[in-house]
Image 1 (cartoon, helix red, strand yellow):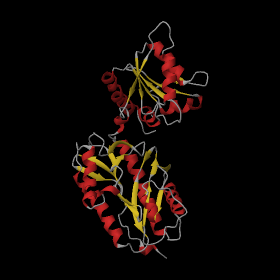
Image 2 (spheres, rainbow, N blue to C red):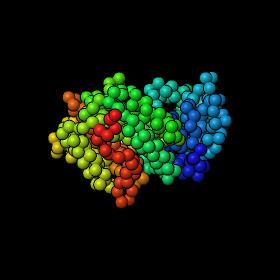
Image 3 (cartoon, one colour):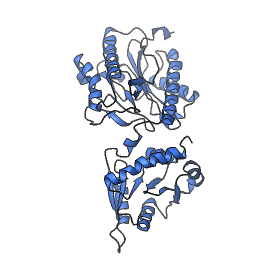
Image 4 (tube, one colour):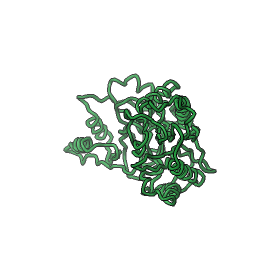
Length: 375
């Protein structure tokens, strides 16, 4: 695993800084991405229990060997059907006299919360352990600024995605279906080293392109109409996210008008985002361009989102969010216009915020005219 002990200890130090801020004695980590980030453990089940001087990995017998290999900085406690996670946590809380246990409120279900609350309050001779939920991505926010090792994996996922798109575009034909094109893209990413896809690939042609999260259908790609392709490779846990809009055949005047507005909006955001800008202001950079062109009501989603262990993570570049962007963050810039009677255009790149501004990581060309690919 790429996560070294020093890196894990540094991450745990940042995590433990939350203890004084929220008056915690310990913190329970249950989300898959945070469990991996703070321990290095890639198994599909388990939790972390972090105390000021101890770090415990709670998982079952399937991961005895794997957990020792991937999370050497952690002491292991085994959970099972007879000794479930909730009872193990309560047992440790009583052993250590924990008064306030933090948890990821955005991840823990109501059922798990209620079970955990009940077992923590079972002791008759003690006041029990109180639960304190951390909301608004309190733990997730610690992953927003990327380390050099993370950036290397992100760059590889992005390079695989760029190369796969470049390989597939020349092979697209009007008679092919959206499903066939999506399968070609997935195969091309896997052939180039992807562990999998970051999300279900979107290939949406014609009026289907007016659906921001369209699913591939048996509709043909056709000619002279917009085709939105949204794809991303996953590589060693990290994700890419890329969108291009193309046309097989000669685009019409409406396409060029819409495409240019979206491209200008993205380029304006790229050149004007800076360290310390509010996420709402970053969103406005592109949104104002689209509104001034008369398409404001046709851009209904946020400008972008963070990308890392999760393809959709913080920061969120939204008019409603009240956060700031900082050097080291990787996020998407993906303005779009969606017209139900015609189709849509979206252009998306992943970028890295540096002290001098934004560096575009995605390298796929923005050349929507693919008429020379038609047999």
